[in-house]
Length: 178
Image 1 (spheres, rainbow, N blue to C red):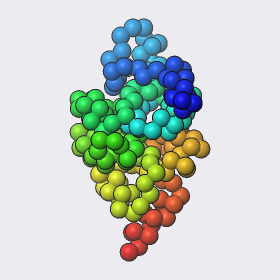
Image 2 (tube, helix red, strand yellow):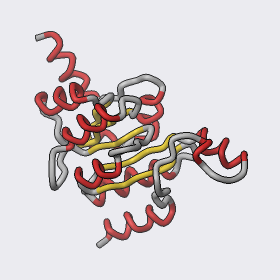
Image 3 (cartoon, one colour):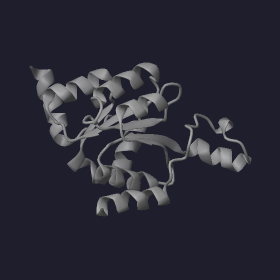
Image 4 (cartoon, rainbow, N blue to C red):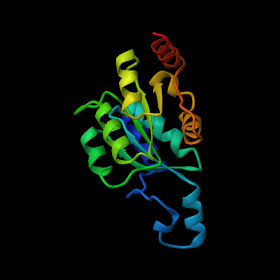
């Protein structure tokens, strides 16, 4: 119940903003509102664990330049919403209740190549990591490591970097050497 309360509290502070907005010109209203939206990074999250979701949402909502544009618990839900539009950054867990997050990564990367995909998961085995990167993920963080500051990792991703948990970076280096 405590985790559920944390999720609800985070949602009140940072509600999902509705339909994904791609450009400032898509936002009706005053010019200053449009300019503010243009400065924001639109993020979406595919995560079924309430505790992990609460931590990620809290970190995103604490950043004035980031806005949560979508929050889904299942792969099917996310794919339905991402069919025609995508956020700037999509955070994806691999272990979803209805399908592998790899399917979400693959489909989103194919349909929306400009969407930066960051995997945030507990799965750190070589096969899963390499499959996610090959499917189109630009970064891969283990949940324990991601708790430091996911917002910093998102900024790195948006500036052309590939955030990797240290153990994942070592795993990738070893895979390249083989």
